Image 1 (cartoon, rainbow, N blue to C red):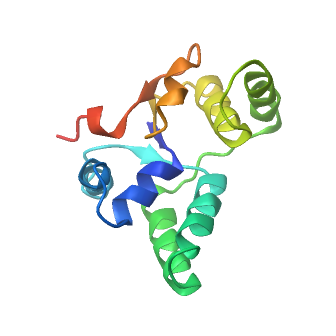
Image 2 (cartoon, rainbow, N blue to C red):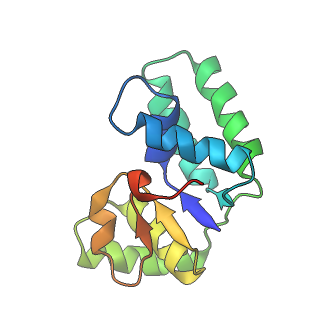
Length: 137
């Protein structure tokens, strides 16, 4: 099972961007059953926040619900993930949100955390994959 970061969702439904096509391929591969993927409530929340800055709230919520249905059951971040994530945050340069998501991916041994945020590649023991590098066939 792979874990999708907010960047994959944002680029998949966003305007023209170099990562739009790879992110759309990932979402389509999940929909087709070629890739098993999930995300977290927190990622969905961040997606809504980002999307609603440029689009109507109804648009952001509608697409978010589509992602929830596509990626369910959602991965649950727990207190132990938070503890490790805060240590990753303290020792590194990435933001707190990404540190906790990465920690959860490590603790739950997900196949890959897929994100456009290349800073995640520097986290020890994290199986990080850039969206353009993920095979979708």
